[in-house]
Image (cartoon, rainbow, N blue to C red; front, side, top):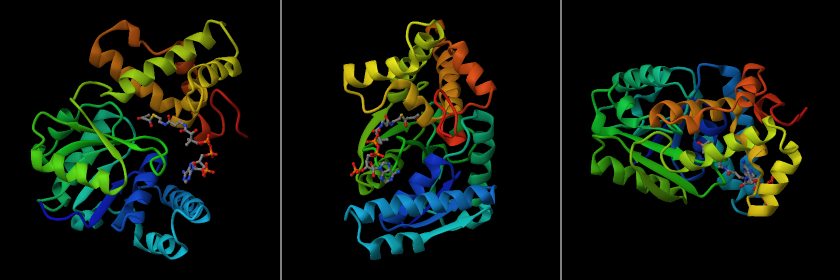
Length: 284
Ligand code: CAA
């Protein structure tokens, strides 16, 4: 497989912008795509400020930081992605919306391009079925925040080729990440274990066992996690947590994965976490 020189990322939210930042910092030409031009503007600002944090800690020179920003191009036009060697999808966690996008990407991208998904739980095999190149479709799941977290979970669909796997793994390693490999079952490895824990934290709050502060303090200090489960849910996005729990519930067919009613209610109320200024905690 030819060397990956151009990366495209579709979706400019927390995950998409973080992945685009990694590409630009590690020397790739990067297209960041979003239909919402305001979202692209916000993404560019957040990438620039994250790069400045690396520069201020001397983890990146000022010149390398400026080069990275120059390599990053934003667009709302999918057709611009025809030159990309790999396209990573990081849009909303909805199977139907993702399938529609994969079908479009299949048409506009070059024949050799890898189509990867940053999905946190949805079947790669089913996303691949929306394309004519299932052997070039793969899951490349970054952790939030992508520029900081060390792990990339790679998920092989039923037809993902060894060549696609090797090229994707090499790219993750070029970004300084450690790779783990998961079979294509709902939630893969990390979210299958993490999300039920976050959901249980909501049940602990919902049933009045403890305050949110004590639940978070308990897990932070009692088990040495960098963040408590409720503040982590706010960082990830409560809507994302809820979608993943629903995928686990349906995909693994066990009631132990039923989303906590309090999580559902917060999402219904638009309390989506840090990105909305309010979730379990108020950030305004
Ligand atoms: N860009 C650049 N630097 C960043 C950054 C960013 N986006 N975010 C944090 N940092 C840096 C900070 O500058 C700081 O550096 P120094 O220690 O050198 O000063 C360091 O990272 C720590 O940041 P903060 O002091 O702001 O805050 P913190 O100590 O609480 O760390 C955190 C923040 C790295 C997010 C840490 O709290 C953490 O690891 N939390 C857990 C995150 C986690 O579990 N993520 C996985 C979620 S699951 C997932 O993503 C899967 C899914 O599909 C949902």
